[in-house]
Amino acid sequence: MHEDGLKIVRGYVLDAIWISDNTVVTMKKINLSKHSLEVDICHYFSSEPRANDPANHCVPVYEVLDVPDNSDRKILVMPLLRKFTSPRFFTSGEAVELVRQVLDGKLDLSGWAKFYHRTNHPVKYYFMDFGLFCKYNPGKDRGEPCDPFPTDIYYLGNAIRTELLESIIDGMVQDEPANRPSMDQVDARFDLLLGSLSTWKLRVRLAFRREIWLIRIVRVVQHTFRIIYYVLTRRPALPRPLNMIPGLVSACPV
Image (cartoon, rainbow, N blue to C red; front, top):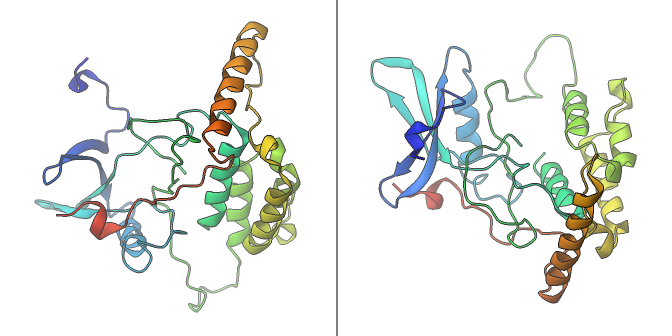
């Protein structure tokens, strides 16, 4: 089927070709009257020295285009990515690596880019869509003092909720914000938990909640052979990416 015959799910996002090297990119339309800070925040994370910081997990913005005769509208040019749940996670280690990168970055990823199993080809996960974000300045007077970060901790805990991390998540989703740990405390607890997980624990198959018994048997056999291959080829149980996508300048030259 020709791509023009496919329905556009989000009318403000479209794929395109970067003419200089035929790279497939994503273009996102934004209205400054609705999301006034999105361009500034994207520039902040896509500029040096943050652009090439391994801990920066914000999607790089290659260019911001102006729309003729419409000063309120901008177009962000970004890499074409996949949703972080596609393909599905096959091992506990793949899911743990996602959590490690999310905590390291203190994800909606979209598109239909080619994919491989995460253990074979470790990936880097990105935060994106900063339309409702704001840059927090602790030195600026905002009236009544408040701490916005416990809310981030709560949402992050719900986003990564899994039985394997239950001991960490229970504290992150406390009803009382003051009882939630800081991001540094979450990092420390995660590192402690990660150190206690054996290689075989990280290679355990992630099963669906409700699996038909016959399908479960087939998937267990497939997973067994997959793990044998990973062990023989010395694939790490925690698939950390060795090469990160470069930053604004080198990723997509003009």
